[in-house]
Image (cartoon, rainbow, N blue to C red; front, top):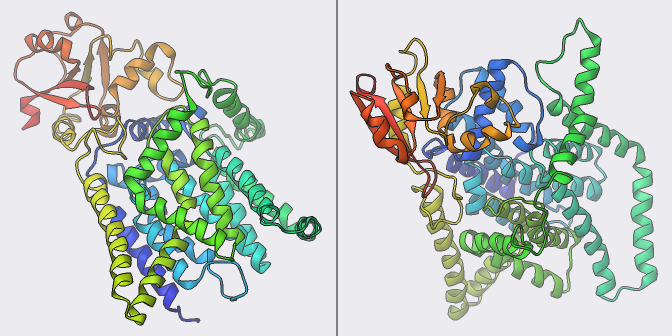
Amino acid sequence: MRRLDRVERAVVALAALAVLARLVGLGTRPFHWDEARVGYWTLRSLETGVYEYRPVAGGPFLYVVGRRLFALGLTSDAAARLPVALIGGLLPLAALLFRQRDPDRTGLSGAETTALAVLLALAPPLLYYSRVRRGDLPLAAFSLVAVGFAWRAWDRGSRRALYAAAGAVGLALTTSGFVFAVLGCWLLAAVLTLDEARVRGEAPAALRERVRSIADGVAERSVALLRAAAITVVVAIAFYLPRGRVDLTEPSTLLTALEAGTVGALQRFLSVRVLGRHAPPTYTNDHALLPFVAGTAAVLLAAALPVVALAVWGFFRERYAGRSRPLVNFAAYWAGVGLLLFPVASEVNEPWVAVHVLAPATIPAAVGLAALWRYASESVSAGDAARVVAALLVLSAAGVHTGAVVAGEVYDDPAADDALPGYAQPGFEYRTAVTAIEGTVGRNGGTDVLYVGSDLAVEDESTLDSPPVPERARAAFAARLPLSWYLERAGAETASVPEPNAMPDSPPPVVVTTPDHRLAVEDRLSGYESYAVEQALTNRRLIVFVAERNAE
């Protein structure tokens, strides 16, 4: 058995550190609204026994994996986030896919490979969204792994690497609708990488020969590529197939499920995410492109300035230092195109979009970081104190900025001026009310929780069981988040009334209302303790009344 070399040991150690950083306090922060709705619908799908892909609810990856976890009773916030945390924690291992072994090859050196693992482990946006149950980090991770295996397959002629890349693409297809933006980034980055030789003055004949060589290579690998395409399709279908709708005694149900998980899934995605976009990106106030780009750039600069600076420096150093590696250029173009393309694909201007730009940017940033470290080492060897001090100051500044963001935003209580959490993230104090509520359910033979007020009431609670939620109930469903996740997790039976005067004479042990109904509800209750909970960072308050006999 081959022993790991120094670079491999360093990368494995960094991956272990990354896993630990993602697991520490994983359940401390309450669920974001998006986490809550996905978690709620996953729990409801277990209750009903049926799950079917709906584009408005995100890709099926988190639902399918979540159903497995939740079926085992692993429904805590930490357990629900565990799959994403492990994907993010193990992502530094992907750095080894880009490592070169032959000095004449165009991959990353040992120092650059280690630097890439450092950035994938510690870059604050990647660390933060490894601790959030959203599909963005898995998509970014699977996309980077797919490119790593694809480069390895092309560079070394490895069919195993090709098939692994195909599997990673299949997984990426299940995570988020943003995957089509990733595919667009790959296409444009490939074109720009091929065109760079022309820009650098390479003869047209040499360019045609290079394109012909690539085409010949594709033709020679046609059988392997077809197998790889089949792997991608099979992996994707395994997640997109509906659950709970197949009866083995009725072959027609299998065909129906297969159609729903293939053509039907694609049609639903196109109808909702493409044709049904009610606010396509235009230069209007509805969804202006430039503010979305500026918003993503602001998050990158606030939360990952050292990585961005290193990526820019690494790219230009690579471009003008006489060694232009296609792999590094491709990653840089992928990140640059993504800064424009992901805001176009996004319907909301939120900080998680930055993850899709930052993940590929870590490759040119690793080149810059390794060069900076090499510069410092050479300065020490040469005894040049000024250069040593300058290099150490830059490295220290990068470390201080990263540490401050990690301490202040990844592990600390979220604040309204933080760059990473987003508006719909409650603070730590939310746990107090949740703990009180969880102590009540299971002790009441009937309705456990009553929502009071037109902003929270729905005619039929079962209409919230699966997406899409009917239009008449969407506002109430959104107003309940993330509380609905915690109530469903606790097994609470819920009901709602539109006005306080419609409350029953004997209210359930938990009553939830809005601030404008607080006094009217409080007048109808006796022996209840009240909690004012913020459902978001600011200006999204609910009042929760918990019977004192149950809250004790």
